[in-house]
Image (tube, rainbow, N blue to C red):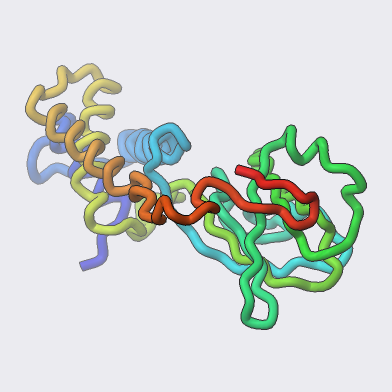
Length: 234
């Protein structure tokens, strides 16, 4: 069975008692409910919540180009990441890790146009497109693999097909029902509020980072030695 955003919205509106069983929303009510759904999903996608789409992608770097926009219609034409978790370059079947650094670290790097295999990546999540900065500037057309957090799917219309795993369905419907009820002046059902809260917490737990299982006997567990700058860096 194909589920659309319309189906999700109607179920949430019935649970919030804005609609009765068997009724369906139309017009402005449906549009406002869709806006609230998208707003909720985007809010859930912030780094603070940890509910997101974990995405692995392969991007082609251009020789001599140290910065790239990423997002819809950008140099890397894909959904704009919230943040980039890790990256590496695969060359002749060997993977070379790229350190993810912050703005201060990147700004302190001298001679940013120096060519070589990229060793550092700084991601600036500007909007509507983010920007990836690399150091060194690629000296050839490398393939870079990244893992990033991306926002949960947004729905451009009520007829858009549901694009999330089934475990998201009930938490989204229940939390949306609570929000819609509040939005339209309905007192939330305490039982529904509890169910919605528990469902949200389950999604957060689902996306929580797994415990570090690297043995403490390995000296590089909390850092790496950088041969280029003769420094052990966490």
